Image (cartoon, rainbow, N blue to C red; front, side, top):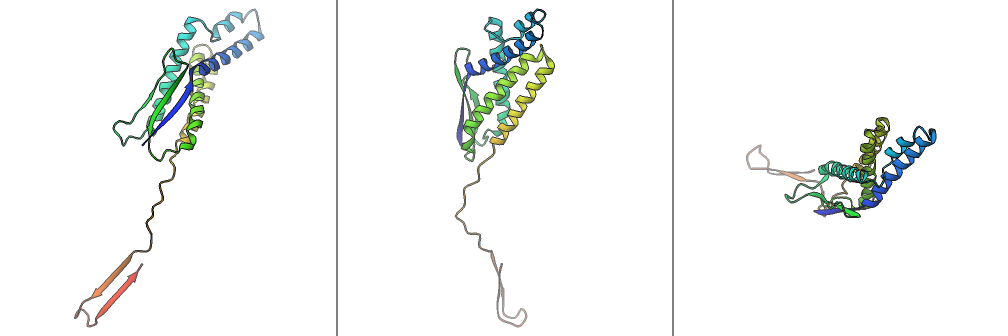
Length: 191
């Protein structure tokens, strides 16, 4: 059994969500600066207290969704196996840990970290846009699911250890006893 550790940067995730909403707000504002100024201001995730609360809540929700999707791949042969995280309001980084089997392909740990971050960002954006622009939200839901498919591809097992056993053909033997058909001897069939 092994422990998979993914370290993510909370500040970078929040910044990515803010940047994406800011760019969308600018695009809306550029279409009609007077008419869309209030819309752009309100749809751009910023440093407002209510925005920060919503961003942390959506981060927590997206992380929980990621962990729930990973559960299928947690090694359950150990009753202490788990998946958990260290996300707190005040931390800049957080760690996701999962108990994985000994055949977990270690080559994909860094890739999984990047894909987990992408999934979380896109799911946060899905939640952010759901009430403001449902059609745009659907796009982000698709982006998140695409990241999740890539995560599942990375969770393939490595090959089992090669056995030192020989796979020479099995053998069999028929031994005739005296008087069964009048002949003595044995008949061996290797096979």
